[in-house]
Image (cartoon, rainbow, N blue to C red; front, top):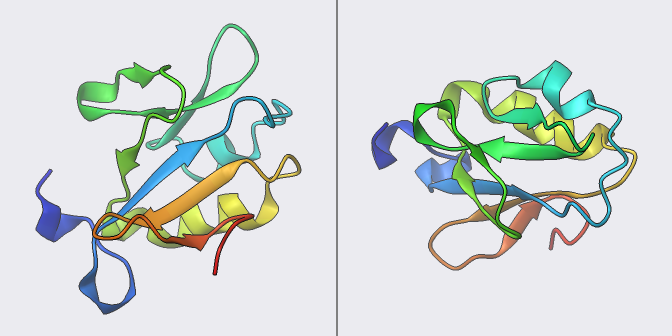
Length: 101
């Protein structure tokens, strides 16, 4: 997937990551955007990388595909653990999530 296909408002590329220390394992993110999020055997949510691989390294990010932007943002808004962070790639400023400016 190219950077042109991953964008937020204004055409800026966005990425998402999950803070597993705060994840409650409710799976709301997976319900909203199963293409981006997945629950692992440990009961916590992780982001998916290219080729559907689960990114388990702390702070691992994945691009937000434009067609899934609304679903990813809704996941961040509805997450009971407030652990989903969506930020601009260019300056790493959080635009949706608990630390959004």
